[in-house]
Image (cartoon, rainbow, N blue to C red; front, side):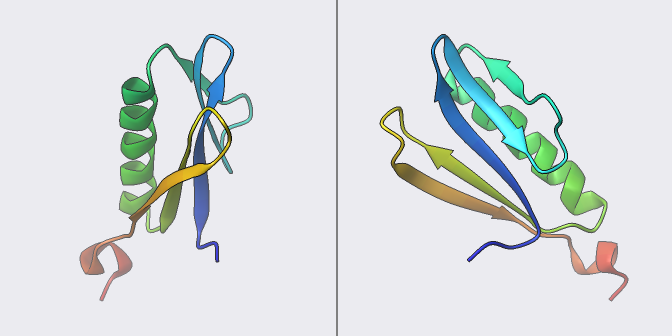
Length: 79
């Protein structure tokens, strides 16, 4: 089940790619840790703007390794 915006981290030939619903070109990183950090920062910005975001992390073989969810605070939702 998908929620709100989605950001995915997938393997590329020379590193890791971050793609998302609002990223036209995506972003490339040499390490998975850098890609994950960038995805988390992007999800935090979306949450600050009131958007729930799911980050999907995939292994090099394409298997889903994990999911993170970032949701807006009640203050950001005006509740």
